[in-house]
Image 1 (cartoon, one colour):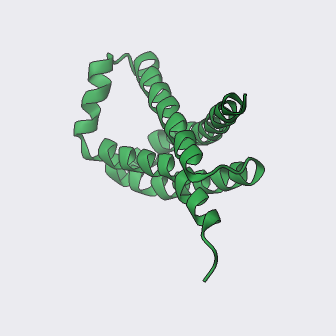
Image 2 (cartoon, helix red, strand yellow; image 1 turned 90 degrees about the vertical axis):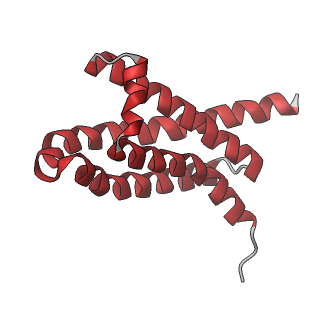
Length: 140
């Protein structure tokens, strides 16, 4: 039925949004770690990277919602799915690449650079809802 098709579209858009931004974020994260952290420290590196990845996320989100327009509640679900996938992938990489336990990974969020990153990830999650609301608002 209709709700099944809507749920499939929400899952598709959330997954595409996550995958595109995660791939770019992974590449930026490597550059941040290898180039920016030694020069600026962890917080400085995050502060340089964050506007870049958020701009990219906004553009990716715009393109996805132009291709598959969603109403604000569905767009919010798209963002939530993308956020959950992002957090899962980040925890998985932290475990696999850095050898951390899940508890050690979660403890990172007590540090300011990781809190700033989390704020950016929450903005990433909200972008679909914001854009869907904006597209419904008449100009003027």
